[in-house]
View 1 (tube, one colour):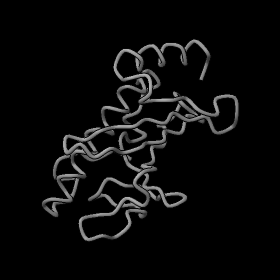
View 2 (spheres, rainbow, N blue to C red):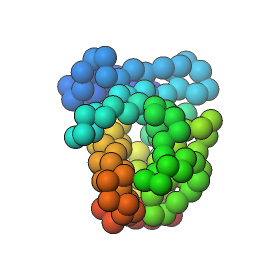
View 3 (cartoon, helix red, strand yellow):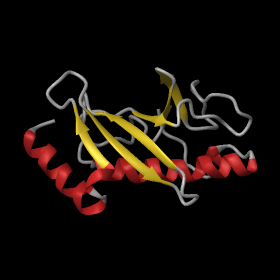
View 4 (cartoon, rainbow, N blue to C red):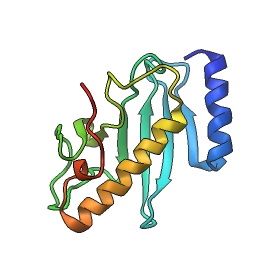
Length: 144
């Protein structure tokens, strides 16, 4: 990501989130990321790590890092790829969520739009916890 793009992304996030709600980390390394704290309607707070290694050229990987591991309505860790739960293969005990498919991705998609999709995923997840219904009941399928 260029410095100009980083500045634009920061400006957008600063206008939409509280300063302490997000942080760019390790930007000058091979594994730059954005960490965001999101609160669901239930008031549960989740910490998300968005891998910026190849952003904006490719879909950034998004992991739920807290709670860790994220569990489904049956108490099973959500670390496997699942169409019904909109998850991909997790890493380091963190759930990797599907928010954009590679064929849907465009380099002009902002991190704010990624965060909005993650927030929608979290609301679908919390509904799954209450009802047992799969997330794909509320979320459209990613095109691969």
